[in-house]
Length: 439
Image 1 (cartoon, one colour):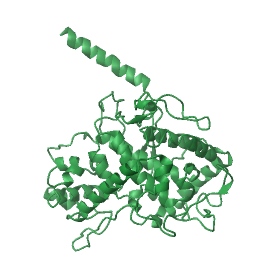
Image 2: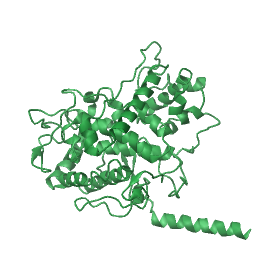
Image 3: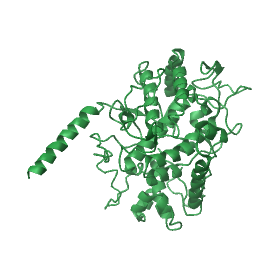
């Protein structure tokens, strides 16, 4: 009895110490999808960016990113560094406009026709560059002259002339979220896939080490951060951290990379691991809520998504279809679409049983019930209520990363090609089954 009492006291003291060392945010701001913004929203963002540009802030971020490039790519620090980097730009913007937040650009919504994205319209960030220097003449950064690394117009140069090669579909990202048990593996899938192809698709400044010149960078990395948060909620621990660190194996005590141009507060990468704590006072409009308590090493402490269902509970005895829960398993921010995605993937197991290896959490839910299947045809916001007879949507292969990009990051070309082939194989399996993408 004494031992049990002692352990209970020790646990209580440990929990108190965790709370003191990792203070909880008193309020969270919400980062919205870039697809949902109005022209007025974009203008307000543009006003903030113009002031930051005049003050030299944008150039400092570009310079800092270039200086730290080797440290924060191809290593596990990729995730916490960019989480903190985007937050710092957002915090500086809020000093100008207290309502400013960095929207996230869910590129999976545009993967098949990126150049047609509403995010690239004239009233948002603008489309392709013009003239021999591919200068960006429209959008919220139109006609900007950048100061780093030298004076030049902000450049945008689509990788297929007037169009952009396909990006990575949501289904591939969903597979990574469900099947990657280690952060280092998830990092390879993200860096060698969706991260690189979006940078390369836009080209110009976006395809350089000083990519923060283009505001796209912050929206793109906000989305990468959103995907990491989904993975953290689906994996065994929000504090999972392995792979390459500055001195060998990565640890949570590794220092947060930073330069004098952009002060990220010092400290270790641990400080950026959990949204809702340690100044990470934001959330997204399509993700689970932060845990009610800071998690201990090796577990999620409290992984509740805000509606009473545990994100880590893969076996719901009532098999309740809950779109909020489904988002933990899907890379798409389209809440109506991702519930359909998961049901259709489970239906496809009948034709391609190997898909269970790519979507292990979906496999645990078993064959969808009639009620689950009917969800696809009711309360739809993504198309007509009945899709009977509609042509099946076939997924396209994503673009390959260029050799220039691979060499710039020091990636292993063989490993990059392996990741690409794995994505194409998954797409083949889905296309050769009953699966039809809802996006």
